[in-house]
Amino acid sequence: MQSRPLVHVNLKFGHHGQSSGYDVLSSFFPYAKVLSLNRSRERIKHLERFKDEKPGMYLYNYSFKMLRLLFNFQVRRSLQENSIVHYLYPENTLAFTPFNFPRTTSIVSTFHQPEEWFDGLSKTGSGRKMMDNFRRSNVAIGLGSNQIPVLTKIFSSENVEFIPHGVDTEYFTPSFVEKEARNILILGSWLRDFDMASKVVAAFKSIDAKVKFTVISSPENERYFRNCDNVLFKNNISDFELLAEIQKSDLLFLPLNGAIANNALLECMSCGLPTVITKLDSIRDYVTEKEAIFVNKNVDDSINALEFLLKNETIRKEKSAAARAKALSFDWRVIAEKTKNVYQKLD
Image (tube, rainbow, N blue to C red; front, side, top):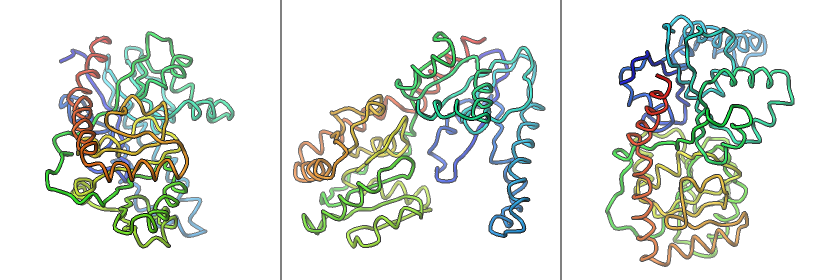
């Protein structure tokens, strides 16, 4: 255990279950003081009622300014001399921090956004202020090797680390029940190519009517599949239901517009699902041709890859075993140990 006090500044997104999301990292540091933006949000939750009322919009927007002030005050008040403070989602927290840290504080930040997101910040005054706050970090952790060039521009190269996102491999485990190779899962919302997904799903109605798709995503994405009777659309499901849906699926179809780390991919790999995924350099830190088939951003490529895996049981099982083995290298215990090494360098 390092000698310096450790603080985790944390956040749990609403669509992440208890075993999902980067905030799970905190559970592997029981000696860390965890400060959660969600807890501050609860204190002003009553202001949500103003969101859809025109006269109350000012108060609703004002509530989020108050949320940031309240949370930042909580963080500043909690800091001891010589603390290490790890911002697990700096884009949502450190970016809006108005106070100066004690001189002896060391800041670690794990960044989740791609290069183009950082490029966009330089175009606005508020974005440049966010960048100034990011530069307070003593160490910047990237979740993808493709982030390293942009992070190196912001921070010196010796202060940039690549540590992958983790997955709970004890919770997300394979089911060994025999399947009929008819169930394809589409999971998640962020940076998904739903236009592509809907065309592939529609095409399968005439290719093989027995193949069914389960789409688990935000409610606003249901519109892409309204005329598809081969789709079961779900949202706001429990952790148990999510695990059950992954385990009973045969394949994961992940059409993407971009990515760094991807919870859906890691959790499905941990459950042994082979994947058909958009060909992106940014995702190759997590998955290779052993576990997945990479496809170009066109409908025919995706259909051919899905059909190939559905019809080839041997290859499907090989990729399933490889996916589980690969996921074990991203177990949270492995990731926590690498993160601990970063803290110890600051000791």
